Amino acid sequence: MKVWFLLFALIGWCHGQVKLSSYNLEADLSVSGLSAGAYMANQYHLAQSKKMVGAAFFAGGPFYCAQGSMLTATNACMKLPTSINVNTLISKTKSYATSMLLDPVSNLAGQKVFIFSGSKDTVVVPGVVKKLEEYYKAFITSPGAIKTVYDIPAQHGMPTDSYGGSCGLTNLDYVNNCDYNGAYEALNHIYGNLQKPSSSASLTGQLILYDQKEYFNWAAPSTYGIDTAGYVYVPSSCQSGAKCKLHIVFHGCLQGREKVGDRFAKNAGYNQVADLNNFIILYPQAKSNMSNPNGCWDWWGYSGMYYANKNGYQMTGVERMMLRTLGKY
Image 1 (cartoon, rainbow, N blue to C red):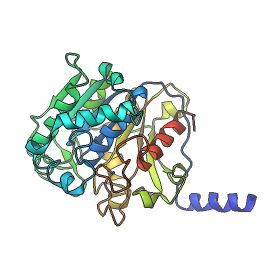
Image 2 (image 1 turned 45 degrees about the vertical axis):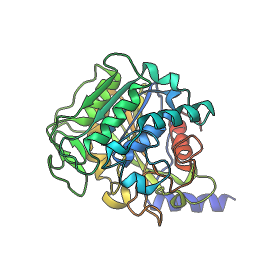
Image 3 (image 1 turned 120 degrees about the vertical axis):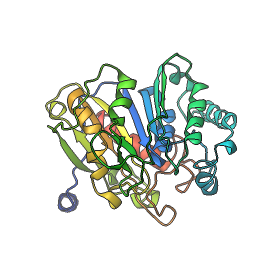
Image 4 (image 1 turned 90 degrees about the vertical axis):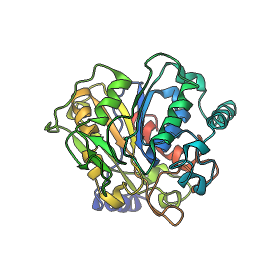
């Protein structure tokens, strides 16, 4: 038994992966995502709303928009907002919550939500993202709790103030230099009173490659469209035992480790905010398979019929990662 344990440890070491650690974390968690990652972040926010204080979405639409259909996902939920019936999606949400497949929707009432859509986005058009705003207004009615940004002339991608391609054009990393720090604006709306990093801020912490395999019990992670490893950014203060917050970030299609390495995790802007404000940033990584050639998070059902609720394979795997950071798994 010891020989096998040593062998597995060496395999993980050779690939640069370490076991995800537990940290001294506060209870107020949050989540965000870009594009397919925004859809995934929305699903995860609703499934785990009891543990959340807010969420942020860049270029994504409302919960269960695809309704289990890739055709609907790539048409209505990206290009045709008039085809999206938000009331139907609200009813599905409440049905799932009643069946305990999502946390109670009453948890959302006191939360903060940030929604961004670039005015030049032709991949997920602004009208689709505005349907997400309409959706959340059914559950969050406090003035100012939902912040929307629709006036930045950005194409499809994560807006930053110092890295990426031209703001109004697409690029292979899907990170746009828009002179706008989307990561800071999102986290500051959720938590308030955060220090804003300068565009030239250097980092004190570590971006760590961690093993994702142990969080999937029935088959290899690739079966569920998941990579064998993910990234976590840990500021030096959090490594030293300071009380920190956890924020989970879901990348978009073609933005996972297999496509861009660590470029999204390094350059999306979250780590600089984390350094100044004691956040740990967890970047789970999806991966392509035959049902998911672009390495998207599952927001249309390629991993199974429960993809959008607590029983989804990806949802439970990320929940276990979250619980590990909290010292509960």
